[in-house]
Image (cartoon, rainbow, N blue to C red; front, side, top):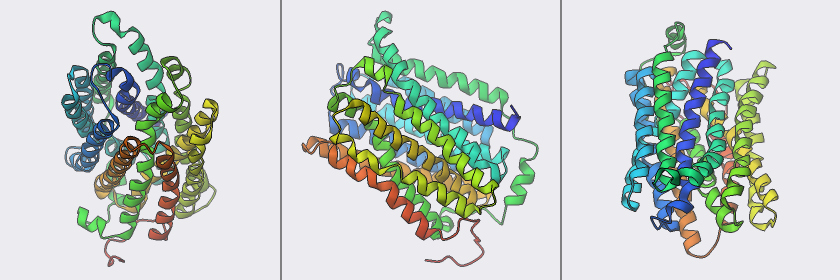
Length: 414
């Protein structure tokens, strides 16, 4: 394996750990409730606590990385979120869980900006979509490992004379600390990074206000808000949905609960591969990205059929298609900042995009908690979530007539 791809694989492991960490609470929720009562609105509040600081630190993480560099910045980010993950295991009530979720969001919020920056340091523009696809596949690896790993810890954690769900957080937090040591010992900025940065630089650093003045930037941020609104609902509520609506048990969680997440990993690789293949065949960046985005969005509406299926296999298949489409979409949307702005502003734009996505997740999570407590069930929430990627694709199509580097020397179009 060439060194750039080894770096991409290392970053993918970090992203896998982040998704394992954020999935600990959703998959362990049934067992946490035996010690700490958690209703639907409280569940939504815990998710919102994570997403609020996650989104804000996504923006702050971009600033941090621009200031201290990728190597030191990613080290700090990983250590912080790993300790925050472990702190869940010490919680004695809802308030402590909220604090732990807030801290986890602070740490994990810097993960994807760090990943995007590292890819930009190691890969030229024509290879970034494929590289980000590999990195984004880490989300699936972590999410695939979560159900069987957590099920195993829950089944055997009582051997250590402590509530088994607490060991879920201690063990997953340890994984992050081990990765942090590996990263700091291994990562160095490549010799050619300065030349790539010089070639992509097109003027002084851009402020957030200058970025948001461009409709292309606003379009990407709003599209991420819509599509991640659906994604975070699936990510944080699918386990609860399966437990409540389809009588899932620990055995099923371990044996088939991972399948949609595996499909998301295939989607991550497929989206990046398709876009890069279209570029290699002579398509423009605009055509390559939009064709792949459109096909990804077309996978999403089918999940609205899940409440009408009496078969667990059919439900898993529908969510697998949605997860495939979502992560193919996500890979491409994560690539768009590298297509639109110079490298000096990449951390800020990646942060804005992540902030939009996190607050989309808060909106859908709160709506889900309200709908369930109001007795409306999962059907209306799934129906709305199934349409969000289609709307987001239309938004990108109309706000970005041509995907290319924005000329910030020209007056912004309203």
